[in-house]
Length: 319
Image (cartoon, rainbow, N blue to C red; front, side, top):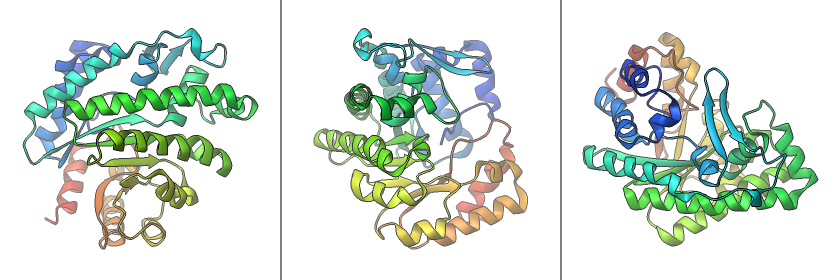
């Protein structure tokens, strides 16, 4: 997850010359280069498109900027206004498709190109509040207090996401992932309504257009709700975060469902015995099912490159 980034000196060098994050993401030449950097350095099996989940609300008409040290800002926050006041700008997605085409033309034939989007619940939390938050309180309150208004926001994200991921597939990605980074903040009934149902709608819409393209779902923090997510959304594989016991996940998920994950990014940062133990535990838990080894969330900016190299050596069976 998030292969490229500030832990790589080549990324930092490019960032210094190109400037702001959104400028990088919307520059197909730069975004292509960033996507390819981890492949050149590490020879990963899959290349993850360099972009951001907030490109969708930007395409839906909100203004988007990234503040240094503070994170993303979206305006106007939908807690203060209505969705109908926004002017949809789907052309803002075009640079992402250009990046996909550039990466697809440059990758080795053996390297899979993965696209992604944010899941509706997580994207909505930023759209409603205008920024990230620890507990998503404003968005959860809106979902409880005015489910009709909130449902319209979710529906708009679903429709745009189907088009967006479909466009990525048509441009050359071979699998897509839906990131629901804030899924863990919801109660079971709200999880069913705002995570499972919208995800199932996206999966159904994409499968109607591209039935053979795998869809990976990542409901971070879902915990015991993983089984319902796997059963009801129709995803082809499920990502699990670092808080999930891999042995438990293997026992409760369908036997033939591919699993992605779930090394703690801080174990990778620490390295040494913590890294080795984490790798061994995950490989042992999932040795009887299809498994994509991955982190449980994004790689930290201070992660030593030597630790990434050690991880790859262990997973590839060379140590």
